[in-house]
Each structure stands twice: as C-alpha cells, then as structure tokens.
Image (cartoon, rainbow, N blue to C red; front, side, top):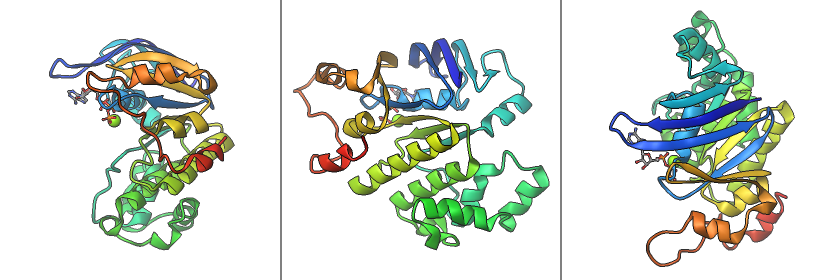
Length: 268
Ligand SMILES: Nc1ncnc2c1ncn2[C@@H]1O[C@H](COP(=O)(O)OP(=O)(O)OP(=O)(O)O)[C@@H](O)[C@H]1O
Ligand SMILES: [Mg+2]
C-alpha cells in the first residue's frame, strides 16, 4: 500500500474540524483526483498525506511509516524526502534562482553538507536543466523566481517534484494558474511521469472534466468528508451536481474551459 487512512480526522488548533471519518487507501502507483467545492478539505487531506498536518484522530500509514504513533523527527524527515508536493502557490523564496528551487527537491535526500553547498553553488545543474525541460522552462534555469509568471512558477514546482523522483506525489491544484492547453499538457506530464516511475499521484483539481479525463479514480470531498470514491467512468452528473450544490441557485460545474472539450478528450 502507498497509504492507508483509517477513520482519520483533522481538527485545527482553533477547533475547526477540516476532515472527518476519512477511510481511504491506495496501492503504490495509483492515480487519484480529489474534487469538491472550495473549503471541502482537499488541501487539508493532501497536507495530511504529506504529514504537514498530523491526524488528530484515526490511524494513518504513508509509504510504510505509521504517522499516528508519534513518529520521531528523523522518521518524519526520511518519510518527507520520499513525498513530493506541488503547491498551488509554490513556496519558493522570491530571490531564489530557478535552478536552486528545482534542486531543493532533493535537499532532504542529500547529506547536510551537500544540501547547504547547493544553496550557494547548485550541485546538479544538468539534472535541474533536464527537469525544467520536461515543463518547457529550460531557458529559465538561471532566472530569478520573482521574475517568473504565476504559471511558470507553478511549473517550477512541478519540475522540482520530477527532479525529486518522489514515490508519492501530492499535487494541490497544480495547474490553477495555467491556460487550458498548458493545464492539460501539464496534468498529462504529471500522470506520465508518475506512471513511468510507479509513483502514486494524488492531485486536487478544480476542473472536473480534467480530473475525469486524466485520472482513473475520483474522490469527491464535501464539508471534510468523502462523498464518493469511484472509478472515473462511474461518476454521474447527479453526483457531481450534489457535490458542488450550494444553497443558492444551481451553478454550472467547474470545468477546464467549455471551449476545450476536444483537448480533454485527448487525455483519455
Ligand atoms: N490552519 C487552519 N486552521 C483552521 N481552519 C483551517 C485551516 N486550514 C484550513 N482550514 C479550514 O478547513 C476547511 C478546508 O480547507 P481546505 O483548504 O482543505 O479546503 P479546499 O477544499 O482545499 O478548498 P479550496 O478549493 O478553496 O482550495 C476550510 O473551511 C478552511 O477554512
Ligand atoms: Mg485547497
């Protein structure tokens, strides 16, 4: 198993319960999309899987490491070095060079002297360049991160995870800042890279059509609970409408872009 969550809950310090009764497991190499309205708990679940938050109830095992039994700092560090996270807004120091941001993917795997040296003198420029080429940013190798667009920064975050060669990739709205064509290409790249290396991929996506087209397993979250966990072809329009239902007038389902159905079909 890549991860197992058994009745997991997450209550924040202010008493807000962001996740309840999460029972979920994935075999190594599975590709899963998380969908659900804003505030449903997608980021909370991804952060919990990445051990950024530890469950406040239930039991969770990630990559063979039990996370609920008070893991040591050393165990957590070792586990986190095997997990790659793509954040919606990549937490990259603004003045940092792109090459350094990509190489940061392996800081947790390198010995301390090499990790520190890499901050001043990038240790594996060819490796960073290769990862950036996968997201069509090789020309930005020595650019400063604060001189990139939001979409370019997001792709730097993806290059970092590709470089890290993580066993578990957690992508939180990885294409929210990209245009439709690039969104599709980037999600396809993530799926292909994960498949090529047998990595498990869990991605939250606001574009439901992109999730259904590119991921075989779909989990719907609402109010911190799992509403469904189904193979993509079995997710019905009625379930999607219920997932995104609000108290106001009926809203159209969020999609990549109504004008791009042919591109989404290409992902199948
Ligand atoms: N650190 C925190 N402290 C208290 N409440 C939090 C914290 N982080 C998230 N929450 C709350 O938990 C709920 C779920 O938030 P989360 O960010 O997981 O939603 P989401 O599904 O990712 O939403 P979005 O689609 O807008 O990104 C929200 O109501 C949010 O306000
Ligand atoms: Mg979120």
